[in-house]
Image (cartoon, rainbow, N blue to C red; front, side, top):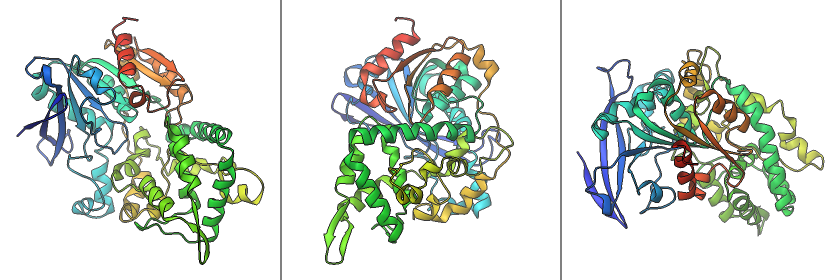
Length: 433
């Protein structure tokens, strides 16, 4: 069943599909996928090629654009666009603390969640493509984790892809999660240093908040327990183009004077709980490290283990001396499931996923080396979320891939740069520049 409606300059159509939970068991359990078709109003009756958008994440539904925002305006000049809510996200069959208990206990939940990685997402795309395009291949735009999915697509079903465009999402083809985080912590440290160079007053502000959290038990209004480690994880903001400025404005409103002395302000707490809560995207926390699992080695809470190799991130040690507090970046830890009320019921499930030893490969280096699909990728210099060296090594491993390496944007360049970024990458893929 489909329904159509309008926004300024565009016609939107809701589309729903039924796909197997496990594509290797096509007669078994099914789940629902949701996708939103977008076409320019003046092209609504034209037969146009399709562009599939794969959102970053994991765990986020596709962007909810209004009209022709960001890169969408450029895409709509020549495509019908399908904004897919990847399985478990958005309007697709949800996977969260409210629904996962329907599966049974933690073991059953963990087994279920093994079907929510890039390989299953790509097979979903291939399952619905005939109904959308009539069987024709489509252009795929993958942002961040969506880029990881796109590389999986090129590895497993390149016949479904006409052109591939990747923004900030070229993964290492063979790195274990430990390798990913060993490369990540030094990048995060550089981003924090750059932030403090821009806003030196934030050194003292961050230390004051951290000291308060080390000596007080702070529970945010939504029930989130704000520990110093959780506060440090706000450094995830530093990977976006406006993130440093957002963190600065957040810190300047941290404290308010009360009859009992200084306390974290309501305004600060309200903003922090919105930034830290996984209530809207729990799959991000649950399968984040599983996205790097490709062999018999467990991920085993990799970000937490590797963090111990970088003692400069220890808040207590920093405050005991005169070192600035270091924020952290894109990582999920066991304590994340203790702090966040949206995740607490799923802690054992996450632990079982972290211990899993039967992950299957997500990429096929031999097939990528023989790639015939036109493909271009934006690689952002010193991207905080995806290691630049890993990305460039992968770029060299994919036959014909053309890169645009730039420091003009951070990881969210396809949003910040909008039409210009997509236009440049399409031209690269088509050998027009």
